[in-house]
Image 1 (cartoon, rainbow, N blue to C red):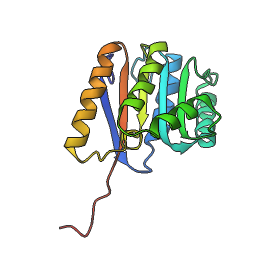
Image 2: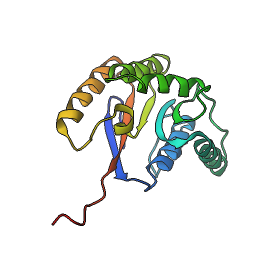
Image 3: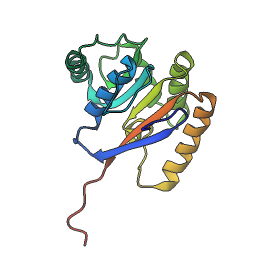
Image 4: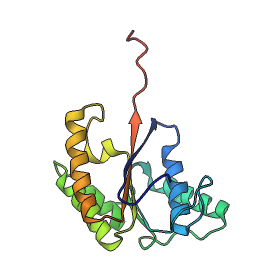
Length: 177
């Protein structure tokens, strides 16, 4: 089992290594209930919060993966609830995300996730990347641990949901010995 209901999981890698396309692929497999990497997948909606990918690139990727899999492009927001920070601010999800990230603290971002989960309580939530949404340094435990506690609190209200966070690993500093 890769992800179970109630999981709070992390997916990490260096910037530009392909984490976002992997999430897009996983999202289409989840939405359609298709096995992924040889693993059985329960069909469920996906809530995707992306703070890096331009909207046009995201849509192109989703269409290409859907075509490769021989499935329809997911219905937004019914199957795939999308919040893209780098998209047209007239898009409902983008407007909601931009409003949430414009406020200090974690409350507005957690409220955004909670609102999405109220309509899709068994969704898999992708936060890509965690440090961009919550504006924190993932190398500092004093910033990460309180956020994880808040995410766990949120998750306790939606026990059938899964939250998968990505974060970018820092490149090794070759000057440090």
